[in-house]
Length: 361
Image (tube, rainbow, N blue to C red; front, side, top):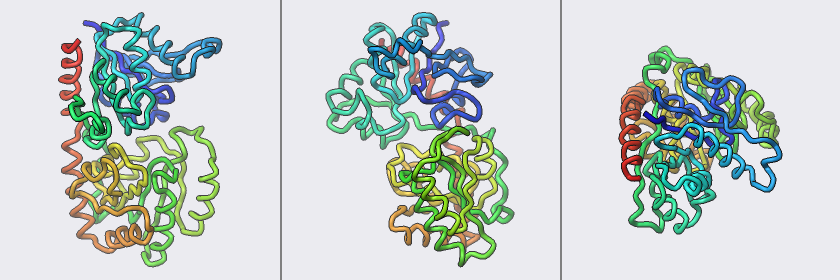
């Protein structure tokens, strides 16, 4: 049987300790016959077949970087002859492949607001995309973004997932570290500065508690020191917030399984909110922003508080820190909610979508 070819975005590295959210999700869902295509990495995940999409430097002219990547993926398509090609988060590359292989079933999975993406920015472009391939959104919020101006657009929803069985065993709330944790990209869109400011206001009134940030500007040990980070570091020192820097995904999950409170203070409209899902799965009491897909994701299993003004975020975190009973209740609610996003059910949903995409062509 012909394999399914799953295409990562050009900057997404498919390797332990380097993969971002999409790479980790693709690795989690990959089946025995799947082949993942992505930019070259030294040591890709060993348990999933991988093909590097690379082009010689001269091939960049006269193409754009995206066109060069699409051409490299096209070469892999010709070699593999897949039954289906799944492209993650790049409508422009999906359309380029659809033009090269008009009879090939193609699916594009949207992890972000498509209205800001090349190849899907206007209703006309999104309509053309939906006519030529299967469109999948990771949340109903993303689906609504795609459908803006297209009342009859056919968009499937497949939420992101976690592997409940592989998560570290959650520590009972009474035995957890009195830690307020931020985990993710340390950028303004993620509310990193709001977290520092809120903890700076709270920690003097919370004896025995600490605050920690795990993350950097990007995923990986080679993440740059940005102007935002250079400004945030002295503010974090004054606030008493530890900045631990980038940590591999398993270390992040281990910290979530021990922290009493995890905060996801995003300003950016999170299309889904995988960090929040992981925090719930690890049994932490969660404070999250009511933006994008986060509200639907967490349901009643989190306290919702926007990052601005900071006083409101600080009040929400402080109230949770002062109430062991509320933390324990949110921990139980979060674990139960996270269980409904387990990868076992997600794999079955993905298999149904793949069959539909192939049958449609």
